[in-house]
Length: 174
Image (cartoon, rainbow, N blue to C red; front, side, top):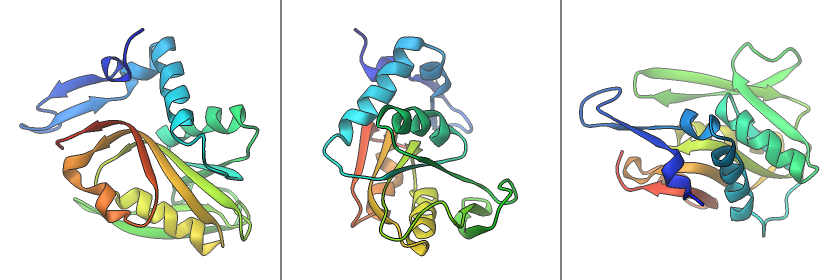
């Protein structure tokens, strides 16, 4: 059986020289890789007690929805601004090249619900930090964050200090 790292395609010098891009599509395109990814992420949080799984657009949907299904938990979407049809709450955050705004339905998290955030990758932690703010603004309690890949060189873990972060693969660089 292959290790999870063997399913991730590494592309040197993309999007710029000196960067190694970790491509999650190679995991998704392999049935064994996809199953191993979801199983490995679930295993990382098997000790957590939670009520709701939250995933960010779009790869958080890919991994979060089957994890919610497997544990018979609701799945909540966090999307880019303007994509959700009902009343929403939103937050903006800084990117390398500007700002982004994400939102979720105002009624998607109930006060006191225990939440797990699922995503494919954590880099600087900015998106995850924004998701935490949204969840907590609705009275949810973030029990943990689980990702397939962590780029440790971008220090996202430090940005989320005080929150549990589990990653299946941790790459030391950017």
